[in-house]
Image 1 (cartoon, rainbow, N blue to C red):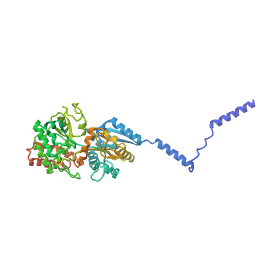
Image 2 (image 1 turned 120 degrees about the horizontal axis):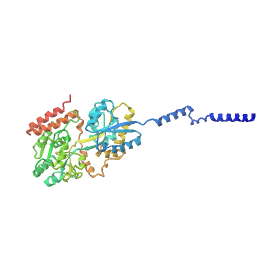
Image 3 (image 1 turned 30 degrees about the vertical axis):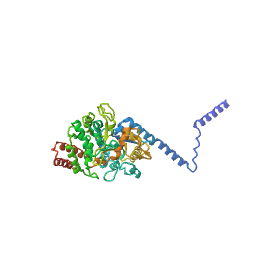
Image 4 (image 1 turned 90 degrees about the horizontal axis):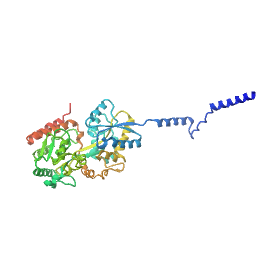
Length: 459
């Protein structure tokens, strides 16, 4: 019996030792590393693997397919996969986008990134101190590769840059080429270069008027919609200017602009129409009522009209040809659209750095071509980190042809002080010219009155 008890006691002691276990030997530190250093390293590595990725927000206006969620998602997913930076996107409209941004700024809840043009990013939010100066992102190579007009528009008068451009376009005009041929007016245009002189323009209008009668082209002025077309027409005819070179004052009281307004007023077939804007002018052009349109760009050239007759055709199937605005020597200075990204200064260095990484990825990398194609516009630079961007649209005949007029992109004066007031004054001025007696004195008086308004800062 005593032997049995002794055996049971021995077994209990064995099980107790097994349950408690013996501590595992500590992992041997690496050579030259103390146990304390190894422990610290292990803790740091654990922290790094659990740290949340940087998350930034992007608000974008509907710039081509940058307003399409599926298209943008593909671009953002690629960026996140390469950088680990998470981007949340909100899609703005032009109807209420500015109000949303201004409300967010007031509430100190602005997005980290925004995509639009210099008139908003530079002249508005930038000069008011809401945006980060990104001038250090432009090195000498960037400055050589980016279109000069596009680059200049991204800088404020104080030398700070508030936008990095990615795409651009040039606004132009269009003609009903079929009608031109029928009226014999096609002799006055150069189809290869899409250019003509001021003299050829007026000869063409007269030929069309003599053949068809009625309105050949309208100086639309019911509002600011499409006003870039009327400005470009008037400024180019005789070389008049619209602003000073430093964008501090409006100069449309230039005698050369008054000369252009007088010539348009006197021309048969050109009417000043206070009842329509640029969009309505395009509708009349599509419907064959007008034989030319001054509110035109690549979007109109590419898109089928409402009649369903296809791109580059009127509702009745007539061929549409885009043209640069006429000038005395045949070389126009075209109004343009420039779009890119800016960074709101929300006081978070990590998010600002992530936003800069995003800009570099979209605007100056091997991925820039994808960002450009998503916009349905043209690259603002010739190449990006060795990638040739001049051939982005080589597979699209219409887009490729349109690139011929891009070198004519002129000064981007939409960044001039008091721009909203100036736009309103411009179409009001056109209305007054149209209802005047057409004398040079009356036209000059109207121009002077409204140019003064444009140069008077809003209260």
